[in-house]
Length: 113
Figure 1: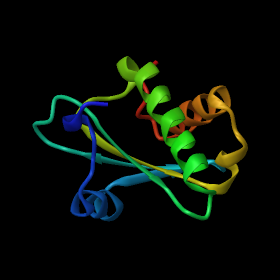
Figure 2 (figure 1 turned 90 degrees about the horizontal axis):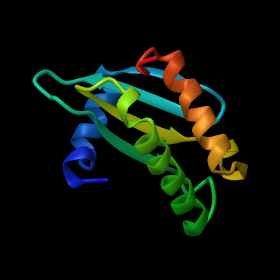
Figure 3 (figure 1 turned 30 degrees about the horizontal axis):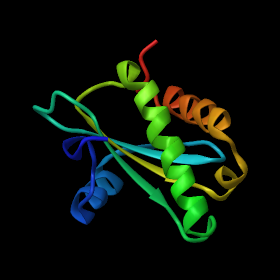
Figure 4 (figure 1 turned 60 degrees about the vertical axis):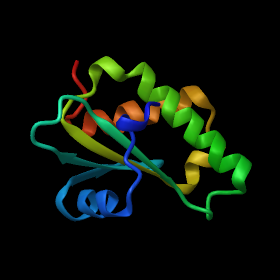
């Protein structure tokens, strides 16, 4: 993903946690923070060390990034999304990750039909 489409700073993560809406399922928690005057969405990923070793964490992040790329046209612009992976995500393949992420985004009503 391009640099301007990522949330990287701790202050931006904390703003989403404190002022954003959250929605979740068993595998993922998503925080969405509306940003005024932003024509695109930004993504921040968080995968804890509790989930597995570095190889497993990086694999989950790759799956999440690819899922976001495939859902690119359906996500509402003007938001920052923070995606936190939970422990059951470690046993999932790409298609299960995409299905679960789509489900949690529909629950939060940020995915266009």
